[in-house]
Each structure stands twice: as structure tokens, then as C-alpha cells.
Image (cartoon, rainbow, N blue to C red):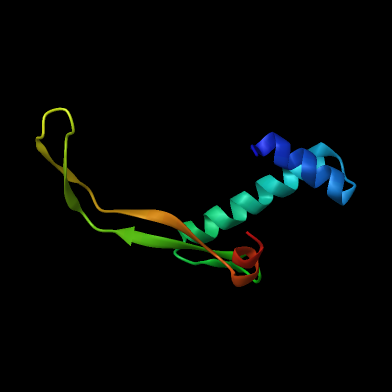
Amino acid sequence: MNKAELITKLADDAGITKTQANAALDSFIGAVTKTLKGGGKVTLVGFGTFSVSKRAARNGRNPQTGEVIKIKARKVAKFKAGKELAAKI
């Protein structure tokens, strides 16, 4: 499912226009992004938790040449499914 399909599904289920559904989805994404950027986490009971994880610097290999390359440390977004979501899948 892509964003357009999700917006259509949200609009149909909630009985709102696609424009309103798009605004709601954009607001949700913006709120989660802002919270994660600030170092916080977002927990939706029954669905899951969005958080930030630190990935340490490490050495990798260029698959074409076999040359060792350095991969910088970085922060990555992480999602852990909640119990209810995991049970439904």
C-alpha cells in the first residue's frame, strides 16, 4: 500500500475527503518526525512504538573491489510492533 492508497482508505473509513485525510496523515508524520528528531519516542498502545536508535561507526567492504571503507555513526528510526499488532499479523 502506498501513500495515495492509504489516504483513500482513511477517507473512506472516516467519511472525510481525501484532502482532509491527506492533511491528517501529513500532520501525523510531521508530529512523529519532530518528536524523533528531538530524541523522544512515540508510543501508540496496541500498535507500536517509534523510537530513535544510534548505529555505531563500523568498517564495511566495497563489494566490487573488496576495499575496506569506513561507515559513519548515525541515528536511525526504529519501529517495534505492539502486542496486538503482532498478534493480528
